[in-house]
Image (cartoon, rainbow, N blue to C red; front, side):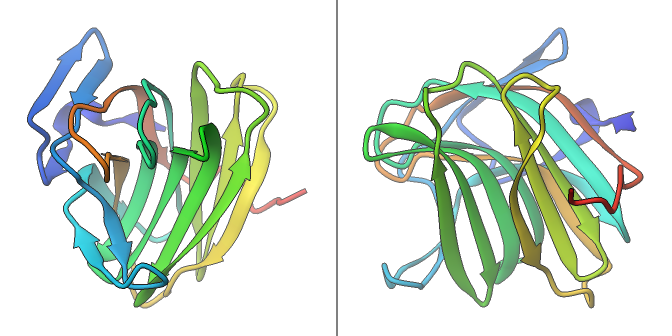
Length: 192
């Protein structure tokens, strides 16, 4: 896999970001988010997203940590074709606990969340694009990987943007750090 963090492009650049010795530290702007309509009725597309191109089938992965303090503070990854077709996944603070959260948007957003037993120090996340699907996995130790979701993603979008994403829908100044972002050939088609 190729490490590309240094050459990636910002969408909605945050007010603070610094890359030092391979670790990107970021702080969010005021009330940022990605969401399309469902349940809440609003359309938001102002979250922070640092991306590179992904074409065909590929795997993208990253290690990250965040200082989750306010409701919906979130950090992780995103795969995006346009404002109405994207997937974001990562850790999100809700009900006072860290959740492995996945939002799939194909016109409208949906949301799934898995409550984690403890607030993790660091999380490892992997998104693998395979034809019309995205396979999302996570690990708390970079060794034992678990499935978070297998989601539909329109195969008509051969080239997409893939990278890191973070938001703070209720505040500003959410801080997170990312390391080891990599994108390359799909690791496997095996789910089990």
